[in-house]
Structure formats: structure tokens, C-alpha cells
Length: 345
Ligand SMILES: NC(=O)CC[C@H](N)C(=O)O
Figure 1 (spheres, rainbow, N blue to C red):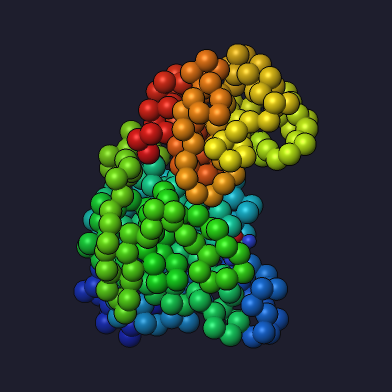
Figure 2 (cartoon, rainbow, N blue to C red):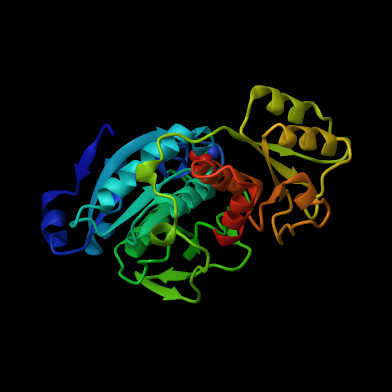
């Protein structure tokens, strides 16, 4: 954190009685800048500091007392486990403070769903944690970041967003970070939850339609305060004519788990099956997921998971399965337990 900023004095006085929302800025397009107003897709991400972002959006002070911290300034594809852990610990620390009502994390959209799911699993608080990004930089015509950020602050400042786990607010929709994925690039309606959004935020009011049923935050057995490192978990993607090279190299690198991004129902090509069974016999966990963005992977359908001692990723996409695998491995190596965790979270 290299900056801690507050709103201008007049706005501060106005906001003093309002809920305190901390904006942790990590970079991405919401902090991006392009050469001209016509550059909606060609620009540099992670440029604008949090104090400028907030100063450009004085309307947030009508909703909350907003303070900002520059946690990182990076494009989200470059997030590592180190950033995940650092961000998670800071969120947990802030939420322990009585004067903090909720957190907004501004983030690049590329791995927003991974960070959001991670926070959903490990933050031991029922206070709102809202992640937000944008698809166009603030310098572009019809930039989407300002309204997304305003909506995110509004959700984080609300009381009815409590107890719903980490949320992702984009394009007027409120999603559970568990379900949502970036399924579309370029377009502003980039984020889709296959089971539907939880609700919408319109003019500072939340309209809820459903609530998450999977375990999260305060009902989670995982707590960021007890996690100081995440094990190496990698994803191997399959397709027609896939060579075993990647799986072999991952095995040789000593990863603790491989998430297989299979075709269709999580099917595994016949050239890959013997490589994966060999690795799982030697103690590398295999998690069977699918590259198909909808539906889910059934246990013992397509492959005999019981026989191979593999785990299925349920409806989690490969990148989210990586997050849950890494978090779960901090607690157990037992494949029955790991499968239970995949059903419950
Ligand atoms: N729309 C975005 O935020 C993408 C920018 C960048 N690739 C990132 O994820 O940070």
C-alpha cells in the first residue's frame, strides 16, 4: 500500500455520518487510460491511482465515507498467489475494524472471478466484500467504470448485502463471486453467472432475487488468517489431438494438483488418462473440470473417478477449481474430503 487517501474536506464532512467503505485498488481497466476517447479496447490497464479514481467520482460521498488504498497497480492476469494472500489478509484486517462497514476491491476483469471466489472462501466476516472492474478505460466514450464503481460502493455500504459472501458488481448486476465468470470479452456485459445474478443495483438501491446456497465467508472452514501459502496447482487444457507434453511437464515440476480442463462433461482424452492416473498414484491430486462454461461435471461419468481416486470440480470452471483446490489442500489431502469440499463450496 503506497497511498492512503481521503475525499476532499467538504465531501468528508458530508460523508462523516455515512457508512465507511474502504476501496482497495489493485489495477485493471477500471484504472486504465487510453490515448484518445476512441480507444475503448486499446489502452494501458492499471494507470490511474485510487485517489484520482475517487476524486473523479464525488457522487460516492453521498452514499458513504469512502477511503482508498492503493493495494497494487497491476493487470489482473499478472496476479499471483502472493497478491491473493496479501489482498485477503488486508480485507480481513480491515473488516475487523468496527468503523469499516464494507470493502470494495477494484480489479482487472481477467481474473476478477478468481480473486472474488478466493475472498468468498477465506474471509471470516459477513460484512460486504464487493469486487468491481470495467471493460472500458475511464478515458473512453461510454466508459463503464464510473457507474460500476458507484454501484459497488453502494452495495458495499448497504446492510442487505451482508452475509451473501463476496460479490461482483458489474453492468448493474450483483453476482456471487462463486458463480460468476467473464464469459465475454470486449463487451460491457462481460460477466455471467450460469445460475443467474443475485440481483441488480439501480440508483443506489439493491434489488435481490436469490441468495447463495454454497458455503462462504463466515460458514467456511477456511480462514485467511490461517493461510500463509498456497500449494502449486496448475490447469491442463484438453482438445482434439492434445499431446501429453503439458501434463508430463506439470507432473515433473512437482505440482501438488492438476486441474484437468476437459472437453464436454469433463472427458479426458485417451492419451492423457494414463499420464494422469500415473501421477495420481504417485500422490498428485487430479481434479476433473470442463472447459465448457455451463453445466457441471458428474462423478464417475466419463471417467471412473472412484477407481482413479480423482475429484470432480462440480460446476466450477477450471480457474475457479484451481482456487478451491489450492485453498482446500491447505487443510486436507484426503480425496473424499476434497470431493466433499467441492460439493459444499
Ligand atoms: N477489462 C479489464 O480489466 C482487462 C484488463 C486487464 N487485462 C486486467 O485484467 O487487468
